[in-house]
Length: 228
Image (cartoon, rainbow, N blue to C red; front, top):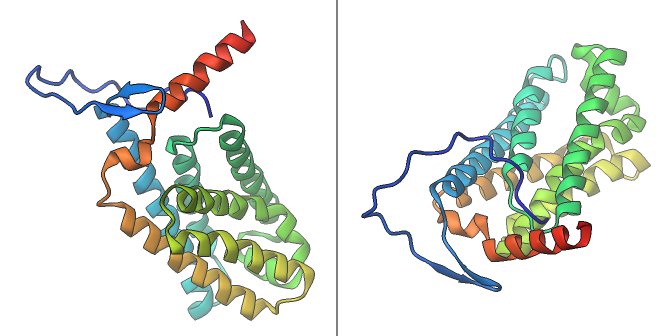
């Protein structure tokens, strides 16, 4: 990624002059973590936590009460994932855009599934006709991409578990190599790992998720030079 996208948060009020934020040394120069950066990181973490809770709630309801009327869980799942991808800090813009595209395709696939099968029968259609994985799979590919980013940056075991289990469960069901109950259990483990990942991130300093802002500035200057 090059430059960060326009900020959705309103500009915070100026900080008192007495507040001196530490200057960090990046690969291409010094930088500071602003209040706006901190708000974006908080938005990212809370959005990802919302998605994790929604996915866990959906799978728990599916296991205990059956697959009817699971669609209300999809709303916070889609919103949380989309907002997390809005505020995530990724150096490579093409990768960031690809994850956002996967999220959008997954949203469209779920909407198509709801129209074809009806909201109450979405889970049953996924179970009986694995071809629907092609429609909804991009959403989980976006979540797996977030997991990969978290593992790449922080080497958290729950992040690589999430990255591997989501595609294994979905592709296993799609190919018929995994029975639906086993695929469902793998998804449940992935949801639990995502929740653990989110909870472990909450107390981390904001600078950890912001990354090296000098790299963003350098990549943006390179992009502007290339397009000038």
